[in-house]
Image (tube, rainbow, N blue to C red):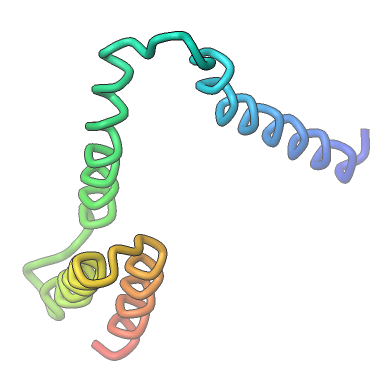
Length: 108
């Protein structure tokens, strides 16, 4: 198998698995079937837990003992939090926070 065919096969398999995972809840919980309480609970708490884990993961290598003392990271987090509170748009918040961070690491 050529490398192009191998890459295409890998992309096709990943796309199929991603689509299956996206459609699975709709296939399992069709209309008329009650959603179990623990699934509803997980739907309520997992988004915040995942975001919290991502924030911790992104900030784990921040150096607070040497210049610039974590300023780019903290300012980017503040920008994301402020934009999210103001605009209530995750895409705008995350993209703007990333832009702020990239500019600050170049300037500081």
